[in-house]
Image (cartoon, rainbow, N blue to C red):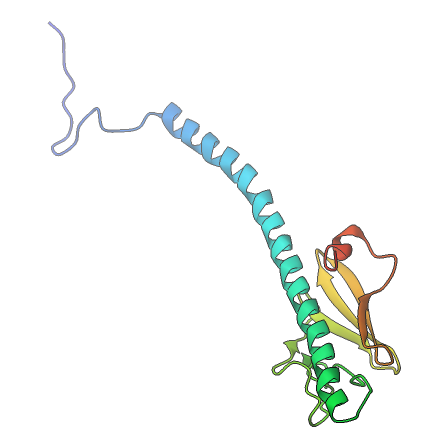
Length: 161
């Protein structure tokens, strides 16, 4: 005669997970996390590159649009500066009638943000942080060019290529 175990009332002996099943699930979740975390980091950098590209395209387009509007009025000059202060960049240097971007870009020193290093004329220097690297840009009011400085690394080059 075989003895059977009795489960407490409301419980079944066959409804629990074994230790091996729990360890297996934890191992599978660990493997998935090890694969997913680097993908999320790469996605963040890709998003910062896309944001930087969009900002650069907006800035360059606004410089040309500003010049075209002022050529009609007989002013052949490009806008003299792109920034008003250190909290809002690319807003037209506060010059009445020469607002570059209507709302400007909030400045910051962390990845995915712009900052300015100086406001020395005729060249004005800007930095876009991406992946912990500083990508240096220069605005030349004589030519209206907003370009990435030479000898940058590959991550910075993705912003303009």
